Image 1 (cartoon, helix red, strand yellow):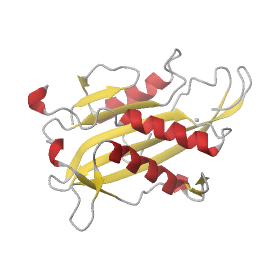
Image 2 (cartoon, one colour; image 1 turned 30 degrees about the vertical axis):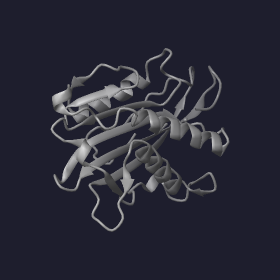
Image 3 (cartoon, one colour; image 1 turned 135 degrees about the vertical axis):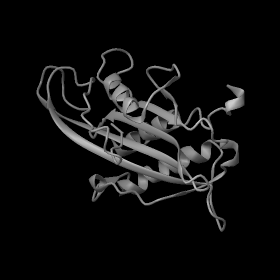
Length: 209
């Protein structure tokens, strides 16, 4: 996978997966107009013909951090997966039925807490980029200048071609978590972030770029 984009920097460039994660979370810590909303970034395999990938199946997530957590009256894992599927279907993908899927969807979530003070809208996410299961969704609380526990989280989504047997698209959503908000508003924020992440899916064919 070579091409990457982010919500704060819409330029397309070539970089490694590790550099992508470092760039994403560094951008999340920069003050300015882009620091109050979830950050998104993705990369894809430019040799893949995404027009041939029409159906998907979602693997059960391996995200222990979500165990026992609820969101919108359901297990958080279920709510997040439904939001991911909604975003995929909005971009033309359909759940596989009897036939084998063209894409396996593998997603993971991470969450951490930090004692912080000052501007609650500028998170500094400390995620090990070499960890293949490190994901990146995020939410905030507390007032300026008052020490507070900042919740940071993320979702990483891999789309794996069942024919090529490797990841052809990878996306990340990162944010400061707002547990003080009512569940419907948190779900709406999640849906909006995922819609932004998949806004340019499918990527353009190599011949069109």
